[in-house]
Image 1: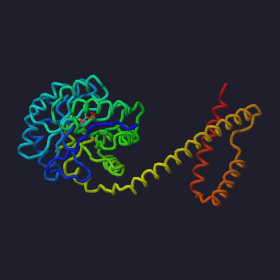
Image 2 (image 1 turned 45 degrees about the horizontal axis):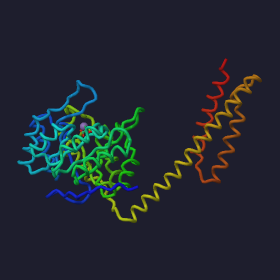
Image 3 (image 1 turned 90 degrees about the vertical axis):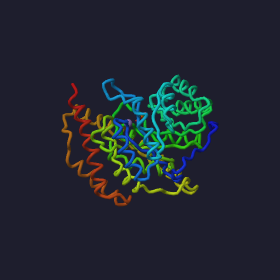
Image 4 (image 1 turned 180 degrees about the horizontal axis):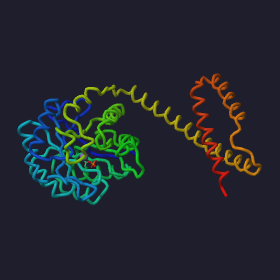
Length: 362
Ligand code: PEP
Ligand code: MN
């Protein structure tokens, strides 16, 4: 079921309308100088929307929690002197009032706030009658309903300039990314609310500079609308998220490397065909896993049998025969000998490990 929101397109005067809509600036505003230097450099590379966190939700209380209100005049300077649009995160009603009073152009709700419907409702109520673009980051947990709920709350309070920020999802197990992208969640959001712009936040997905390009390109290939990328004039010295921030110069390099493919219907069809093919691959991989599971169960049975009868695990002649056989079959199936040798060596090794475990059991 589609979700009905009353949305208005928002165009920023002087900001290019073609994809990607770019937002950049430091994770945190730290000093007036750092804000001004970063903003000036960004502007020289054509960036028009400046982000900077003032109130920082941090996991542990000893981390840098932002300069707060003190940074508002700095953002005002960015707006007045450089003609850029300014954006910051708000997490409560007080932040909203302070940001509005200082003339902030765009506010966003952070991932931890989106996960809390009471906080979202309070912020929504405080914005009644205000015409301001509001961006909503996905909640930290992969729950598209909770994300949609936040849009509904803001929309019912009269906010029609809304966009989503996809910043990845928290996982217990370690992955390559700081926050797992789980692209299926923003894709589902797009399916349910097609007219809602989606901005990808590669910085918080990746957690490290090296991965930013790949995620930014993927976001563009999925036809998302914009990118918000943390940028600092001196990333190594940043007081928060130092590993994931880029210099304005490197941000510019990243943007120029992006390949923007057309978002025509044909491409969407291509995309969905690709998705179908990938699902097919996933199915085969699941089957392989199941086969490995059963194969190893048989290996354990063999182990038990060998133990009972006092036979050694490795019988070289048997292994030679298996390998010869498989290489012969591989050629007929169009698989390379190298691949088959690698795969069967790995399977054989795992098989021996399973057998050994059984043999060593009391
Ligand atoms: C941020 O954008 O600086 C931030 C705190 O992000 P998130 O809410 O995604 O953690
Ligand atoms: Mn950050």
